[in-house]
Amino acid sequence: MGSVKDLEIYEEATENRLGMGDFVFSDRFSVFDWGEMPDCIPNKGAALCLMAAWNFEMLNEQGFCSHYLGVINSDDEQVDLNDLDCITNKMSISLSRVVKPSFYNGLFDYSYFINRRGKINNFVIPLEVIYRTGAPKGSSLFRTIEELEKVGKTEDLHQFLARYGLLSKPKTGDLFPKIGYDFTTKFEPSDRIIDEEEAYRISGLTQSQFMQLKELRYKAIKIVSKRTKEVGLIDYDGKHEYRLFNGNVEIADVFGTLDENRFVFNGRQVSKEFLRQIYRREQREWVEDTVRAKVEAKEKGIENWKVLINFQPEKLEPKLIRLVSEMYTSTAQRYTGINLFGARDLEKVMKDLEPFYSD
Image (cartoon, rainbow, N blue to C red; front, side):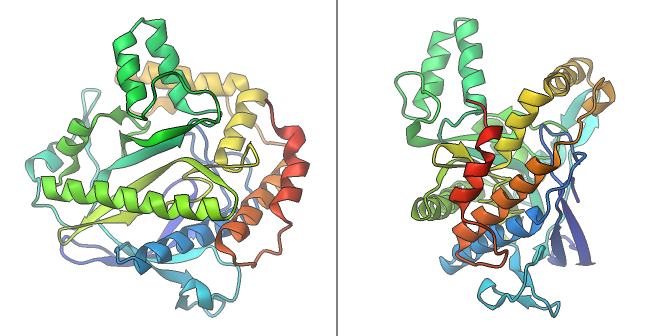
């Protein structure tokens, strides 16, 4: 299915019928759209599975549908979290069709979705939603502000900040007066930020269905925001994916995990963002090469930017991998209240990780 999750399909989805399958959350990870990195993080997949299942069950309790059906226990049975008796990295889900845009002359063609608006059923919506409640270290928001200042687009900068209820530039760690949203493309090699008008245009949704998506977006954010506050975390930003089945927009993929969100604990990142920062500091040549290759691929109309890469990512030191594994499992236990990993308290894990953070 992707670089960090596998999909086991038991029944294929059709236009009018949901399929059946399992997400298998691997211990692989990906940063900067690279795909599978040289290392694996033990128990990372199981930690993400636990957090995602908790969020889906909270969403379902509030009357919202999703593709989540349960997690897989030691007897290979589908159960709710309350009946889970073992560490698991498998989640049972219903499936929808994946319809990708075509690629012609250096551009992605969404005419299938545009021309069939309101007539397509059981499909993954070709959008991702990004939301921001604040400005953590590493946020692309700072890069956007810098670019607007550099070219002197003062009015555009004011409009950009106003989306978050801001009157002036934020500082690292600031929380915003209101949540800000972005849409990006889902099926392109590098996520492309688009405005709400284009998001609606390529979504394949009717206006009422697009409103459903925005309402569901807010509900999912509130579930994660409420829980993080309860357990001493801050949810700074995250992403959602969606599907449409029988006229209803539903959450797809997963949400509210350390890979989809940037959580902060006692001022420190406890998410995949920590790994991004490690690579920016220790393997800068490779990170800068990915940025260059993406820009060059866009300029030349090349679909796969990785063919232009000159450097490869290298493995991280074993001690760091072990501590990152603990960061994932300890955070999952704290977030869900379910102690399956026997992980140390997050405070102790973060103390040992402190030498790896850069201010």
